[in-house]
Length: 137
Image (cartoon, rainbow, N blue to C red; front, side, top):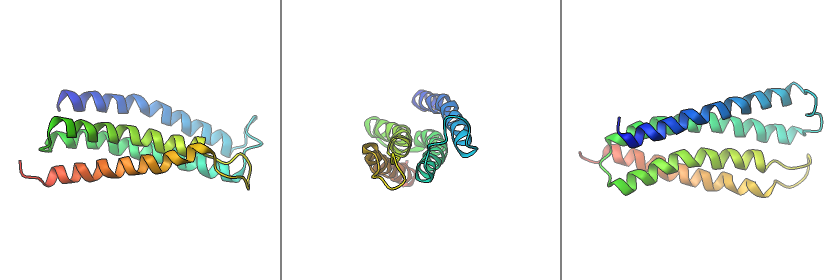
C-alpha cells in the first residue's frame, strides 16, 4: 500500500466512529428518547439517509484508496480522486443532516444542496477509479 493510500485509509477509519455516533443518535431519535420528541417523520427519513450514506460511502472510499494504487494515473489525478472519494461522503451526509426540513411540510434546509454536490464528486471519482483500473499498466 502506498503512503498516500495508507494516510487516506487511516483518515477514513478515524471517521468511522463519527458514523457510529450518528447511528447512536439515529437510534435515540427512532426510540423517541428525551429531547427528540419534536423531530418530524421527514427529519427522521433525512437522518436515516444521512447515516446510511455515510457508512456505505466511507467504506467504498476506503476500498477506493487501495484500488487507486493500481491505477496508471498521474499523481495529481490520483490525488484528485483520493480526495473526492473521501470528501464526498462528508458532503452527502452533511446535506442530509443539515438539509432536513424544520417542519413536516416545510422546505428542505439550505445544506440539502450538498447532497447533489457530493454525489457528483463521488460519481466522478468512482468512474475515475474504474477507468484507472481499465487503463494499461
